[in-house]
Image (cartoon, rainbow over all chains, first blue to last red; front, side, top):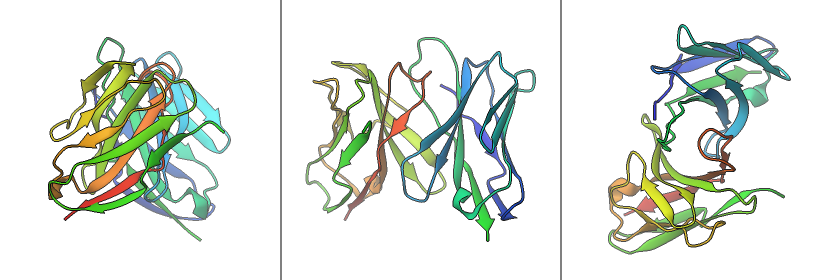
Length: 112
Length: 113
């Protein structure tokens, strides 16, 4: 399995601003998933983007994928205080390796 | 309601006293896994199971055991807990393996004294 590396490690913005988080990975993928974790709680799946897709939207979330650069970005528009959480990416390779690895995440703080 | 449940949610125990953390899902998922989360180290996979009676090690399996006798349950067993196993533990499941969306339980905060 491969681990995504989220950047930045921490991000602090004001309510209403946009937040962008990035994820880099090392080897080719089948898909890439983004998750959110509110403090001390279980991760919640946000969006899955397949390797043949370049952009995907879900509400205020926009995910892009650049397989040539082995990177993805998550954009949260018009952020709210409730978006305060840690965000993790999980680049998923194909093959028979069934391990699943998460990185250390980006801690987003949205100040009211 | 589709969910993954874990019990207990909080546990304080002492070194060497065997314990089991239960995990159950009601979505008929084939893939289940356990993670531990520690500050600065992110989320690390302990064990996973592709189906009943099929389990394999994740990245940090030492000191843990698992079993998958039924599709819905995937207990995590600490035969002789030690203080370095103090952590936040999560169980997760998915329909068709790691390619799929993972559903996480609420977490179990374990303290080993």
